[in-house]
Image (cartoon, rainbow, N blue to C red):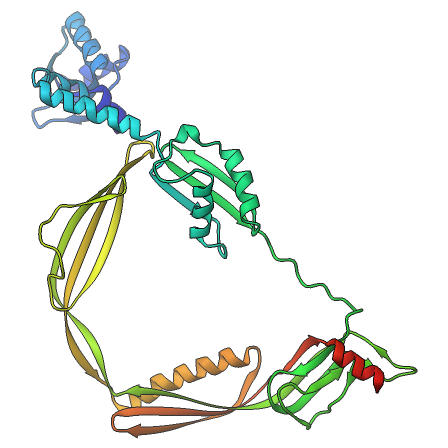
Length: 400
């Protein structure tokens, strides 16, 4: 920011010529002349940068003391630039118009950023903003952040908090989503434990309810494992729960051709540049279309901003095309088998969750250049899932 302010105010690079440059610098410091970037030249003179007021004060000190002379090495900044173009009226008018347009554009919204959302889509939040009158091109002065936030909480019930931060022409929308309430354990709701897949029971622990199977029993998917009906005394219904582990078996297969397509980049690149001005794209090139037969297209966007973070309604778009040739990559049967075996194990581990693999065996076949790997595995995993009883199931228990 200091560099920007110095450029706006204007500054000069000066050289102090005297017999002892250290004495000249000390005189400047004693007279409170502000300077920066002090350096010593090869001939022993001191060079420093000063602002325009600092330069005027430096000239006065040099004249009063007679200890050194001041020579301007370089001038820079807005005041000097304006002085040089003072007679170029068209350029000066254009510069003034550009400054005015830039200042005017800073009171309109040119960028909206949404942060904090995970499950609620950004498109849904932006649509709700549009319904409340906040969109690209909206005047910032017409936006009442608190009113918009309160109405959006009504429009999107999944949100628990929303606030709009105004950064000039950029609006930052910060949201927080509601945390889903955990399902309460209701002892009054009749619930049974059922098998989610077939297997042979290896261990069962009924925390509540009546155990209907024992270790060594074979069950199918959907079979009742722990009943909600407890046949003690007159009998009663409860919320059954427990842990049921079973031995399960899997057979999974994946295929892969030994020859696969591959991209080999040639190193040739072509870039096209365009400008998006207020939502309208202006291409800075004449010929469109694909410049190569086979290529990847990479598009990057850069939004222009002013010092301080104010966003301008201008985006620089660059489309980069990278040429490649299509080739084939060959794998050995062993390499393909190893790749497929790893993928099969990953799929199996995802399927059994916290369970474990007791034994596994891979079977590999090559059919005209296509390798098939089949995994045969025995596992131990949790198969019990709780399910509320239907009214028909409850009625059947009562009749029994």
